[in-house]
Length: 358
Image (tube, rainbow, N blue to C red; front, side, top):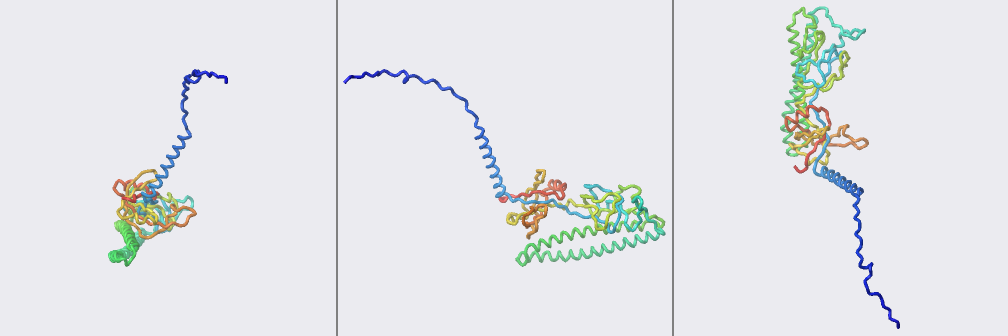
Protein backbone atom coordinates (compact mmCIF):
# COMPACT_ATOMS: atom_id res chain seq x y z
CA UNK A 1 0.00 0.00 0.00
CA UNK A 2 1.39 3.33 -1.05
CA UNK A 3 2.14 5.80 1.68
CA UNK A 4 0.80 9.34 1.39
CA UNK A 5 2.82 12.09 2.90
CA UNK A 6 0.56 14.93 3.96
CA UNK A 7 1.97 18.37 4.56
CA UNK A 8 2.21 18.75 8.32
CA UNK A 9 3.28 22.39 8.24
CA UNK A 10 0.97 25.05 9.51
CA UNK A 11 -1.30 26.62 7.01
CA UNK A 12 -0.62 30.17 6.04
CA UNK A 13 -4.30 31.10 6.50
CA UNK A 14 -4.62 29.33 9.82
CA UNK A 15 -2.17 31.54 11.64
CA UNK A 16 -2.75 34.74 9.73
CA UNK A 17 -3.96 37.52 11.99
CA UNK A 18 -7.35 38.89 11.13
CA UNK A 19 -7.56 42.48 10.09
CA UNK A 20 -8.90 44.86 12.68
CA UNK A 21 -12.55 45.57 12.09
CA UNK A 22 -13.48 49.16 11.44
CA UNK A 23 -15.60 50.50 14.30
CA UNK A 24 -18.83 52.03 13.13
CA UNK A 25 -20.56 54.82 15.14
CA UNK A 26 -23.82 53.81 16.80
CA UNK A 27 -26.99 55.37 15.42
CA UNK A 28 -29.41 57.02 17.90
CA UNK A 29 -32.56 54.97 18.27
CA UNK A 30 -35.16 57.72 18.21
CA UNK A 31 -38.06 55.28 18.26
CA UNK A 32 -36.92 53.88 21.59
CA UNK A 33 -36.43 57.38 23.07
CA UNK A 34 -39.90 58.51 21.98
CA UNK A 35 -41.39 55.30 23.35
CA UNK A 36 -39.81 55.82 26.78
CA UNK A 37 -40.83 59.47 26.84
CA UNK A 38 -44.45 58.55 26.10
CA UNK A 39 -44.31 55.81 28.69
CA UNK A 40 -42.97 58.18 31.36
CA UNK A 41 -45.64 60.79 30.47
CA UNK A 42 -48.40 58.19 30.67
CA UNK A 43 -47.15 56.92 34.03
CA UNK A 44 -47.01 60.52 35.34
CA UNK A 45 -50.56 61.29 34.21
CA UNK A 46 -51.99 58.09 35.67
CA UNK A 47 -50.08 58.54 38.94
CA UNK A 48 -51.27 62.15 39.22
CA UNK A 49 -54.86 61.11 38.56
CA UNK A 50 -54.89 58.40 41.21
CA UNK A 51 -53.01 60.63 43.66
CA UNK A 52 -55.58 63.42 43.32
CA UNK A 53 -58.46 60.96 43.41
CA UNK A 54 -57.40 59.12 46.56
CA UNK A 55 -55.54 61.90 48.40
CA UNK A 56 -57.80 64.92 47.76
CA UNK A 57 -61.49 65.67 48.03
CA UNK A 58 -62.48 67.98 45.18
CA UNK A 59 -65.59 70.12 44.67
CA UNK A 60 -66.88 72.90 42.43
CA UNK A 61 -67.75 76.16 44.12
CA UNK A 62 -68.82 79.76 43.63
CA UNK A 63 -67.93 83.02 45.37
CA UNK A 64 -71.11 84.48 46.91
CA UNK A 65 -71.72 87.93 48.45
CA UNK A 66 -74.65 89.28 50.44
CA UNK A 67 -76.49 91.10 47.67
CA UNK A 68 -79.47 93.44 47.33
CA UNK A 69 -81.65 94.20 44.30
CA UNK A 70 -82.45 97.90 43.88
CA UNK A 71 -85.95 98.67 42.54
CA UNK A 72 -88.29 101.65 42.64
CA UNK A 73 -91.69 101.39 44.31
CA UNK A 74 -93.57 102.69 41.25
CA UNK A 75 -92.98 102.85 37.52
CA UNK A 76 -90.48 105.62 36.86
CA UNK A 77 -87.94 107.12 34.50
CA UNK A 78 -84.27 107.06 35.39
CA UNK A 79 -82.89 110.58 34.99
CA UNK A 80 -79.23 109.96 35.75
CA UNK A 81 -77.11 107.18 37.26
CA UNK A 82 -74.76 108.60 39.92
CA UNK A 83 -72.55 105.55 40.43
CA UNK A 84 -70.53 103.16 38.28
CA UNK A 85 -70.11 99.41 38.40
CA UNK A 86 -67.55 98.60 41.08
CA UNK A 87 -68.14 101.88 42.96
CA UNK A 88 -68.14 101.75 46.76
CA UNK A 89 -71.24 103.28 48.39
CA UNK A 90 -72.23 104.16 51.95
CA UNK A 91 -75.66 104.32 53.55
CA UNK A 92 -77.38 107.47 52.21
CA UNK A 93 -75.22 107.88 49.08
CA UNK A 94 -77.24 108.77 45.97
CA UNK A 95 -77.44 105.87 43.54
CA UNK A 96 -79.58 107.52 40.84
CA UNK A 97 -82.07 110.31 40.20
CA UNK A 98 -85.52 109.36 38.96
CA UNK A 99 -89.02 110.67 38.29
CA UNK A 100 -92.18 108.70 39.01
CA UNK A 101 -94.68 108.02 36.26
CA UNK A 102 -97.43 110.11 37.88
CA UNK A 103 -95.52 113.16 36.76
CA UNK A 104 -95.82 114.43 33.18
CA UNK A 105 -93.37 113.38 30.46
CA UNK A 106 -92.83 115.46 27.34
CA UNK A 107 -93.82 113.30 24.39
CA UNK A 108 -91.58 115.12 21.91
CA UNK A 109 -88.08 114.57 23.21
CA UNK A 110 -88.56 112.25 26.16
CA UNK A 111 -87.32 114.84 28.65
CA UNK A 112 -88.95 115.24 32.04
CA UNK A 113 -90.91 118.31 33.01
CA UNK A 114 -91.02 119.45 36.62
CA UNK A 115 -94.42 119.02 38.26
CA UNK A 116 -95.90 122.20 39.67
CA UNK A 117 -98.56 121.88 42.38
CA UNK A 118 -101.35 124.34 42.79
CA UNK A 119 -99.75 125.66 45.96
CA UNK A 120 -96.43 125.05 47.67
CA UNK A 121 -98.25 124.10 50.85
CA UNK A 122 -100.17 121.31 49.05
CA UNK A 123 -97.10 119.53 47.73
CA UNK A 124 -95.34 119.82 51.08
CA UNK A 125 -98.30 118.33 52.92
CA UNK A 126 -98.65 115.58 50.34
CA UNK A 127 -94.97 114.62 50.62
CA UNK A 128 -95.16 114.73 54.42
CA UNK A 129 -98.16 112.37 54.53
CA UNK A 130 -96.68 110.00 51.94
CA UNK A 131 -93.34 109.64 53.73
CA UNK A 132 -95.11 109.24 57.08
CA UNK A 133 -97.12 106.37 55.64
CA UNK A 134 -93.97 104.72 54.30
CA UNK A 135 -92.29 105.03 57.70
CA UNK A 136 -95.28 103.44 59.46
CA UNK A 137 -95.33 100.56 56.99
CA UNK A 138 -91.61 99.99 57.44
CA UNK A 139 -91.94 100.18 61.24
CA UNK A 140 -94.73 97.60 61.16
CA UNK A 141 -92.57 95.42 58.95
CA UNK A 142 -89.68 95.86 61.38
CA UNK A 143 -91.87 94.91 64.37
CA UNK A 144 -93.01 91.75 62.62
CA UNK A 145 -89.47 90.73 61.70
CA UNK A 146 -88.17 91.54 65.19
CA UNK A 147 -90.83 89.42 66.89
CA UNK A 148 -90.11 86.59 64.46
CA UNK A 149 -86.39 86.93 65.22
CA UNK A 150 -87.01 86.69 68.98
CA UNK A 151 -89.13 83.58 68.46
CA UNK A 152 -86.48 81.91 66.28
CA UNK A 153 -83.74 82.70 68.81
CA UNK A 154 -85.83 81.02 71.51
CA UNK A 155 -86.26 77.96 69.30
CA UNK A 156 -82.53 77.78 68.56
CA UNK A 157 -81.44 76.32 71.90
CA UNK A 158 -84.42 73.98 72.02
CA UNK A 159 -83.74 72.68 68.51
CA UNK A 160 -80.05 72.26 69.30
CA UNK A 161 -80.84 70.08 72.34
CA UNK A 162 -83.30 67.95 70.36
CA UNK A 163 -80.68 67.39 67.65
CA UNK A 164 -78.13 66.30 70.28
CA UNK A 165 -80.49 63.60 71.54
CA UNK A 166 -81.39 62.58 67.95
CA UNK A 167 -84.98 63.74 68.36
CA UNK A 168 -84.55 65.90 65.24
CA UNK A 169 -82.26 65.60 62.22
CA UNK A 170 -79.29 67.95 62.04
CA UNK A 171 -80.69 69.59 58.95
CA UNK A 172 -83.46 71.20 61.01
CA UNK A 173 -80.92 73.01 63.20
CA UNK A 174 -78.88 74.27 60.24
CA UNK A 175 -82.03 75.39 58.46
CA UNK A 176 -83.02 77.38 61.55
CA UNK A 177 -79.56 79.00 61.74
CA UNK A 178 -79.80 80.05 58.08
CA UNK A 179 -83.25 81.55 58.68
CA UNK A 180 -81.94 83.56 61.64
CA UNK A 181 -79.00 84.92 59.61
CA UNK A 182 -81.27 85.92 56.71
CA UNK A 183 -83.68 87.60 59.11
CA UNK A 184 -80.86 89.58 60.75
CA UNK A 185 -79.89 90.93 57.33
CA UNK A 186 -83.50 91.87 56.52
CA UNK A 187 -83.90 93.66 59.86
CA UNK A 188 -80.72 95.67 59.21
CA UNK A 189 -81.93 96.71 55.74
CA UNK A 190 -85.36 97.73 57.07
CA UNK A 191 -83.75 99.87 59.81
CA UNK A 192 -81.60 101.63 57.19
CA UNK A 193 -84.67 102.31 55.03
CA UNK A 194 -86.52 103.83 58.01
CA UNK A 195 -83.50 105.98 58.79
CA UNK A 196 -83.40 107.34 55.24
CA UNK A 197 -87.14 108.07 55.23
CA UNK A 198 -86.85 109.97 58.52
CA UNK A 199 -84.03 112.07 57.05
CA UNK A 200 -86.34 113.01 54.16
CA UNK A 201 -89.15 113.81 56.61
CA UNK A 202 -86.92 116.15 58.61
CA UNK A 203 -85.84 117.89 55.42
CA UNK A 204 -89.48 118.58 54.52
CA UNK A 205 -90.21 119.90 58.03
CA UNK A 206 -87.33 122.37 57.79
CA UNK A 207 -88.42 123.78 54.42
CA UNK A 208 -90.28 127.12 54.43
CA UNK A 209 -93.86 127.18 53.18
CA UNK A 210 -92.88 128.98 49.97
CA UNK A 211 -90.17 126.45 49.08
CA UNK A 212 -90.38 124.71 45.72
CA UNK A 213 -90.54 120.93 45.45
CA UNK A 214 -87.14 120.94 43.76
CA UNK A 215 -85.60 122.07 47.07
CA UNK A 216 -85.91 118.58 48.56
CA UNK A 217 -82.70 116.58 48.69
CA UNK A 218 -82.25 113.01 49.81
CA UNK A 219 -79.00 112.98 51.76
CA UNK A 220 -76.93 111.83 48.79
CA UNK A 221 -73.22 112.14 48.28
CA UNK A 222 -73.41 115.48 46.51
CA UNK A 223 -72.03 114.30 43.20
CA UNK A 224 -75.00 115.36 41.08
CA UNK A 225 -75.42 118.49 38.97
CA UNK A 226 -77.54 121.55 39.74
CA UNK A 227 -80.60 120.11 37.96
CA UNK A 228 -80.54 116.83 39.89
CA UNK A 229 -82.52 118.37 42.77
CA UNK A 230 -85.57 118.70 40.50
CA UNK A 231 -86.10 114.98 40.78
CA UNK A 232 -86.15 112.31 43.46
CA UNK A 233 -82.95 110.69 44.62
CA UNK A 234 -82.69 106.98 45.41
CA UNK A 235 -80.13 106.50 48.17
CA UNK A 236 -78.23 103.37 49.19
CA UNK A 237 -79.77 101.43 52.12
CA UNK A 238 -76.49 99.57 52.85
CA UNK A 239 -72.72 99.96 52.81
CA UNK A 240 -71.31 97.98 49.91
CA UNK A 241 -70.34 97.96 46.24
CA UNK A 242 -72.24 98.32 42.97
CA UNK A 243 -71.86 95.03 41.12
CA UNK A 244 -74.17 95.51 38.12
CA UNK A 245 -76.21 98.36 36.60
CA UNK A 246 -79.08 97.37 34.30
CA UNK A 247 -80.47 100.79 33.33
CA UNK A 248 -79.11 103.88 31.60
CA UNK A 249 -79.91 107.59 31.81
CA UNK A 250 -83.46 108.53 30.69
CA UNK A 251 -84.50 104.88 30.50
CA UNK A 252 -87.91 103.81 31.84
CA UNK A 253 -87.93 101.39 34.79
CA UNK A 254 -91.01 99.33 35.63
CA UNK A 255 -91.54 98.60 39.32
CA UNK A 256 -90.75 94.90 38.88
CA UNK A 257 -87.46 95.58 37.09
CA UNK A 258 -84.12 95.53 38.90
CA UNK A 259 -82.17 98.74 38.32
CA UNK A 260 -78.89 97.66 39.91
CA UNK A 261 -77.28 95.13 42.25
CA UNK A 262 -75.48 96.05 45.47
CA UNK A 263 -73.36 93.59 47.44
CA UNK A 264 -71.63 93.57 50.82
CA UNK A 265 -68.14 92.04 50.62
CA UNK A 266 -67.89 91.66 54.41
CA UNK A 267 -70.25 88.68 54.09
CA UNK A 268 -68.32 86.96 51.27
CA UNK A 269 -68.26 83.15 51.26
CA UNK A 270 -67.49 80.32 48.85
CA UNK A 271 -70.45 78.01 48.37
CA UNK A 272 -68.93 74.59 47.60
CA UNK A 273 -70.82 71.57 46.23
CA UNK A 274 -69.32 68.30 47.46
CA UNK A 275 -70.32 64.84 46.26
CA UNK A 276 -72.39 62.74 48.60
CA UNK A 277 -69.69 60.08 48.87
CA UNK A 278 -67.31 62.73 50.27
CA UNK A 279 -69.64 63.63 53.13
CA UNK A 280 -67.53 61.95 55.83
CA UNK A 281 -64.38 63.74 54.62
CA UNK A 282 -65.69 67.24 55.40
CA UNK A 283 -65.81 68.61 58.93
CA UNK A 284 -66.51 72.05 60.32
CA UNK A 285 -63.33 74.17 60.78
CA UNK A 286 -61.42 72.15 58.15
CA UNK A 287 -58.90 74.21 56.16
CA UNK A 288 -59.32 73.92 52.38
CA UNK A 289 -57.54 75.23 49.28
CA UNK A 290 -59.49 77.40 46.83
CA UNK A 291 -58.27 77.58 43.23
CA UNK A 292 -59.41 80.47 41.02
CA UNK A 293 -59.67 80.18 37.20
CA UNK A 294 -56.46 82.19 36.71
CA UNK A 295 -54.48 79.60 38.72
CA UNK A 296 -54.38 81.70 41.92
CA UNK A 297 -54.65 79.73 45.16
CA UNK A 298 -56.20 80.85 48.42
CA UNK A 299 -57.21 79.25 51.71
CA UNK A 300 -60.56 79.02 53.46
CA UNK A 301 -62.20 77.50 56.51
CA UNK A 302 -65.33 75.32 56.46
CA UNK A 303 -67.90 77.40 58.33
CA UNK A 304 -71.09 75.41 57.86
CA UNK A 305 -72.18 72.09 56.36
CA UNK A 306 -75.79 71.72 55.30
CA UNK A 307 -76.74 68.18 56.27
CA UNK A 308 -79.08 67.56 53.38
CA UNK A 309 -78.65 67.16 49.66
CA UNK A 310 -79.52 69.86 47.12
CA UNK A 311 -79.56 70.01 43.35
CA UNK A 312 -76.27 70.98 41.76
CA UNK A 313 -76.56 74.45 40.13
CA UNK A 314 -77.14 74.37 36.38
CA UNK A 315 -73.77 75.89 35.50
CA UNK A 316 -72.03 72.88 37.11
CA UNK A 317 -74.49 70.23 35.93
CA UNK A 318 -73.32 68.23 32.92
CA UNK A 319 -75.79 68.05 30.05
CA UNK A 320 -77.60 64.83 29.21
CA UNK A 321 -76.80 63.39 32.64
CA UNK A 322 -79.20 62.70 35.52
CA UNK A 323 -79.67 65.49 38.04
CA UNK A 324 -76.84 65.47 40.57
CA UNK A 325 -77.58 66.04 44.25
CA UNK A 326 -74.74 67.45 46.34
CA UNK A 327 -73.91 68.64 49.86
CA UNK A 328 -73.65 72.42 50.25
CA UNK A 329 -70.71 73.70 52.29
CA UNK A 330 -70.10 77.35 53.24
CA UNK A 331 -66.43 78.36 53.31
CA UNK A 332 -65.14 81.65 54.76
CA UNK A 333 -61.74 83.30 54.09
CA UNK A 334 -58.85 81.98 56.18
CA UNK A 335 -57.21 85.40 56.66
CA UNK A 336 -57.76 89.10 55.79
CA UNK A 337 -55.41 88.59 52.83
CA UNK A 338 -57.69 85.87 51.46
CA UNK A 339 -60.72 88.10 52.02
CA UNK A 340 -59.16 90.86 49.90
CA UNK A 341 -58.71 88.37 47.07
CA UNK A 342 -62.24 86.99 47.29
CA UNK A 343 -63.79 90.48 47.23
CA UNK A 344 -62.82 90.84 43.56
CA UNK A 345 -64.68 87.78 42.29
CA UNK A 346 -68.43 87.94 42.91
CA UNK A 347 -70.22 84.93 41.32
CA UNK A 348 -66.89 83.56 40.05
CA UNK A 349 -66.60 79.77 39.79
CA UNK A 350 -63.76 78.17 41.75
CA UNK A 351 -62.46 74.71 42.64
CA UNK A 352 -62.11 73.58 46.27
CA UNK A 353 -59.56 70.98 47.40
CA UNK A 354 -59.13 69.26 50.76
CA UNK A 355 -56.69 66.54 51.79
CA UNK A 356 -58.29 63.35 53.12
CA UNK A 357 -55.45 62.71 55.54
CA UNK A 358 -55.06 66.04 57.35
